[in-house]
Length: 232
Image 1 (spheres, helix red, strand yellow):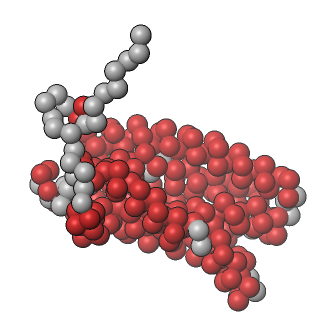
Image 2 (tube, rainbow, N blue to C red):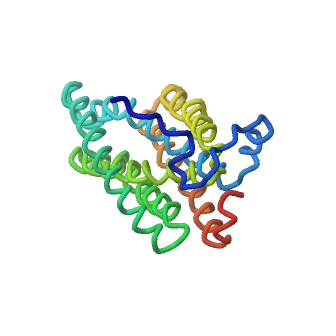
Image 3 (spheres, rainbow, N blue to C red):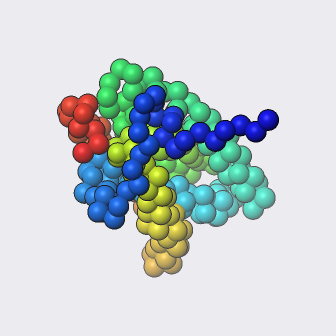
């Protein structure tokens, strides 16, 4: 027996009218929604750093720590999978628990995790010890992935219900266009210009610091505003 397809918006609560399809003006209003913009531009900086880490990380380990290409690729592949999965899962639980205690819980988790990722990534890229580099790189990537669940939740919760799909689509477009689409090339061009890959990759902790500052402003703003104002 076939199941009846639920009406759009039925999951938003009994008696709730289906979301009205947004018009162009409402979509453009996303660019004036400060909470949403703070989330997304922080996510852009976060994606910029992660994209360049993933691309240049194996080359960096080969050049400065004498690892073989196969070992470097295997290490980064394992870190992305294990730290990525673990960070995403743990971040989801931590973010939910924090959000129950304060209205800025998700934003606070994003802020703390990325502020911790800044020194971890800097040490990983500056230390002369291969073991320390591997350990701190794994820690930095884990910390970056802690925010995966909370940042996507905030993208949805900072906009009206009828704009959620548009807001998510716009955020994906922005993080790739301004983030990981160009970050590997930016690092490569800086390395060529300075003739120093180690110096070039240090822009990545800088990008994470920019990310953390965006999300710190968001956390402070959300903590101060009234619950009804979150979507303004």
